[in-house]
Amino acid sequence: MKKEIYLDNAATTKTDEKVVKAMNQYFNEKYGNASSLHLKGEEAKRGLEEARDIIARKIKANSNEIIFTGSGTEANNFALKGLFFANCPKKDHIITTKIEHDCVLNTCKWLESKGCRVTYLDVDEQGFVNPKDVERAIISKTFVVSIIHGNNEIGTIQNIREIGRICKKKGVLFHTDACQSFAKVPIHVKKDNIDLMTINAHKIHGPKGVGALYIKRKKGIRITPLLHGGGQEFKLRSSTENVPGIIGFGKAVKRMKRKHIKKMRKLRDYFIDELMKIPKVKLNGPTGKKRLCNNINICFKNIEGESIGSFLNAKGIYTSTGSACSSKSLEPSHVLSAIGLDDLEANSSIRMSLSKYNKKEDIDFAVDEIKKTVEKLRKISPLQ
Image (cartoon, rainbow, N blue to C red):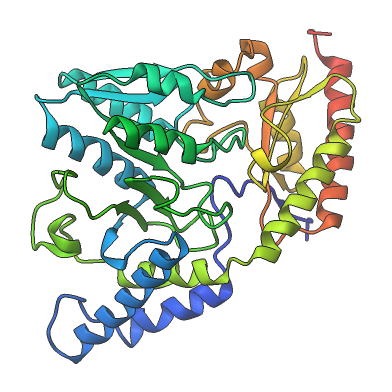
């Protein structure tokens, strides 16, 4: 069999075997509806609430502040649309950045068609937003600031504690998309002054199709549900809960250990150091602790990133040219454009993202194949 090395963990991760095992009994044994009052329903409800408590403790929240959703995308839509519907027309202004995930940017664009005003803040060449720019952008009509915590393409980790402090001082809600950073970067929702936060399971070896929105329980947060029905999830997100998925979410959180973060960070730095030995390359995003522990994004100048990815794919090395939600688009990455790369540089970049399952020999094999691929493509590239 061809050797396979999976380096696209920012798109999704392999589901942990122990997560699958924990989920299985909720498919064929404890399969009740968590809203049912009989024993099967009570079993499902008990498992669901245990998972909710695990996730809440991870971010130092209360369990009744975790609202389960079908994905991170749904949670982001719920946060921004729900707040807009609840606050408009009294307040109708959102502040975000130009490097958000597509689901936030496209939600903001849709809200603009409904009369919402949106400020899209610039970032610097490493992808950081200046907290002072956030403060300057806040006006009396601002109801939420929404800024991604760990960027899905270039790994930039924003200073959310400072941004949250500014929002609290100004009396504005702060929402962060933490799908990539959750369980990889310490988050303390109270100390970080977070009012709403989006997380999901499939970036940390949990199942696809389950996410959550943290909503701080305090007076002044008004949010309109997007789904109406039986009143599940504290009457904020009606729908029969995906109990097996939620069980898997909780188990995945328990299975993510500090040692895994250290391992990924060490492999990431080694990977970057080896790739930087290749001529005419550039690291996109920051270095060290300000970068997600598993993220590598490299510009191989004058070669199409898609060509590199295709050659590596044939060798069983799986990478990405950007966000999985938009990587099939011919348009250059909006994130790479926002940090100052021109179209050629943006289209010459590939993203590689690690997991706890990657080993040093995987990285050595990948580096060797990347070097061969780059050398081969540069010989035939008309851009040299």
